[in-house]
Length: 331
Image (cartoon, rainbow, N blue to C red):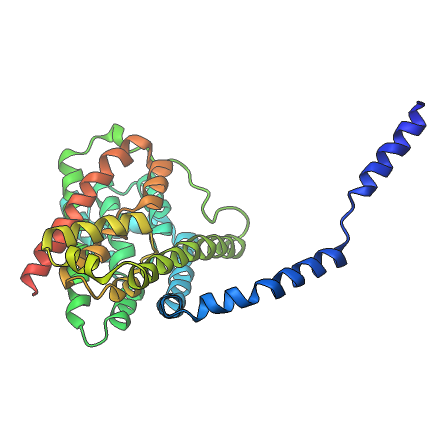
């Protein structure tokens, strides 16, 4: 067989695998027609209707706050230079910690943005203990998050106060612990490409697109998990876990770590877990913005794996303790 004939045969073979778009569309429509009955029966089941109700409610309520938080945190990360914080914070680290923690109340930033911002603060000369306090407080007590919490818990201003108090206390406690026990070799901030590159506007919109897609995926996952808990898990199981204070707090704290929901949206998931006590749901709200699976990965990438391995378990314990103490005091 000549080379020309072999080439022609190869072209004919490849041509035989060409896909006809009309045929594909026809097959898809046919498959949709064949399965519409079972799908309709599945969606009309009471369990699925309950699942869809909770899922849609959580997503629709949380999405506006998530978008607002992403816009504000992108603006903070792109347009506010780290040197600004170095100038306004006190020189004494022990005083800089609470000031940096309180700065999170007026500088909105989701956890996706707080990690690279904290890394930039350390590189800009801010004391690591103050950067740690800002890292933990900014996604937990900023105005967008507190407003979302008030909307998610209508008529319960105590939940907003408790979230602010417990989160700020945990952030400051971690800052002071780092000041006393931290070692310079544990914290090695690396350059982070989040929202970098190009002009300020291009970096801003690049950061917005990244965070909306990233945080939106976790929001959908969290809403699905909340809906599944409400619709599929037997009420007796949830009541058994919720009926014991210690297991309830630990269960929701671990759930916050696993779900990794953006802080602008987690209050709506917490409010749907009505079987659990206010203290357990407060633990969910305090732990999630400080340490979860995505934050562990971002902290390891920004500050080094050694930092993340030491920082994560201590942060989890301090956040749970702050939530429990605050819940007991404000009960």
